[in-house]
Structure formats: C-alpha cells, structure tokens
Length: 108
Image 1 (spheres, rainbow, N blue to C red):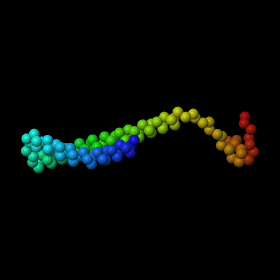
Image 2 (image 1 turned 180 degrees about the vertical axis):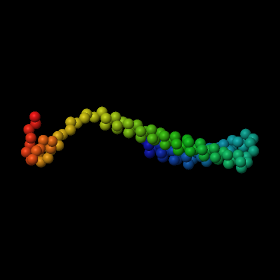
Image 3 (image 1 turned 90 degrees about the vertical axis):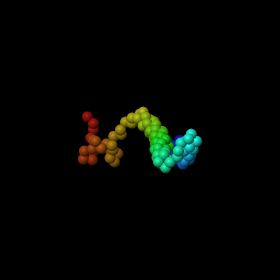
Image 4 (image 1 turned 135 degrees about the vertical axis):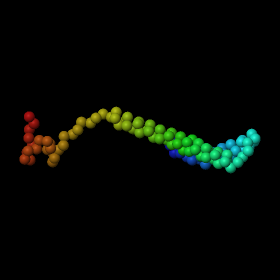
C-alpha cells in the first residue's frame, strides 16, 4: 500500500502542477483578466506551495500512518505473548547458583 501511495503521488505531482497552472491562467484570461508577469509569477509560487502540501506531505502522512498501524499491531502481538519462565543457568550440567568447590550443594 505504501509503495502504491508513493508511486501515485509521484505521478500526480508531475502532471498536476503544470496542468493546474495552465488551467488557472487560461481561466483568468478567459474571464477578462490582464495577464502580467507579476500575476503569473505569483500563481506559480502559490501552486508550488499547494503542490508541496497536497502531493508530497499528504501522501507521506498516509504512508507513515499505515506504517505506524503495522508497528502498533506488531507491538500488540508481542506484548500479548505469554511470558516464559526463566531457566536456571547451568555450568557443565550443574546449577550455576549452587556450586561450591565443584560439588553441587543441596538446596535448603
């Protein structure tokens, strides 16, 4: 899912920036606006900001959300496992906690 979102985001960012900018300028001219370099430059800057937000940060947030859900699920599965009883450490077959001079000491 994450790779799909990243691929879609990349394809969308290449196409949308130029197309939407072109449509906005055409609409501005058709509605009677006088196109000048200042207006065009401002539109380019605004659409670059919008593209950064819509085509980069939003899909990145969705991808990180999906990865977070997977991580939380793994942590839940790990924390819900039964605890194991620790084994008593042994050295050469003898209990490591009760060895005295090489002879196993009886527990009291």
